[in-house]
Image (cartoon, rainbow, N blue to C red; front, side, top):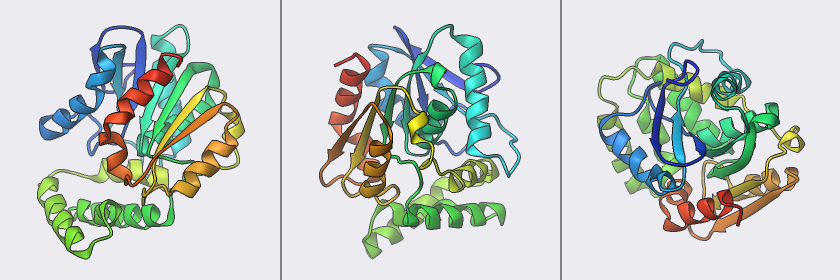
Length: 252
């Protein structure tokens, strides 16, 4: 735990806070943990990585600003100087909110596959997820359109998502996505003071490239890197992602 938030710490070196979306408000286990470890492993060779998660049992009306305040409290009580932050997808939205609300806590900021507001396809799919979760249905099939534009592939992704959901309670995940549904930092990007790297896939359906460009235009000290042909998930699995992020975090 870190300041009351679930936390997985691994690696050696200066701190790197990692923010991402997980179905449960807990340190991932099973396949989720394996995916997480594969994602953060390159960073653990240079930093002590702290994967912070939201606290469980949040009010369904929790906002992104309220979530960011929880994370700010954990960081402030644990570290005595600004820390580097890496946020991906929904975790990137949270990282942007944190950097805008508490610029004193963020050293360098790396964002992957995110923007200052959700795109229309992302909003539609996540709202469907929220509605399914609150009705007690398995919600992940609603996210299929975020993965691919192919009808056949979407059918397969829906089936896999349904199986992956199992009998878990997804209300907590719906709360996180509902917070992002109301997230819109377009008018406050100037409050982000940290040097920022934004890595975006050219074909991201969740946060379209145009929104990423708008985000970059609003931040004073920013570098935008676009991966041609990459979709949302492909941004993080691209081998260039960790290399580009590490180079930036190390001041290059």
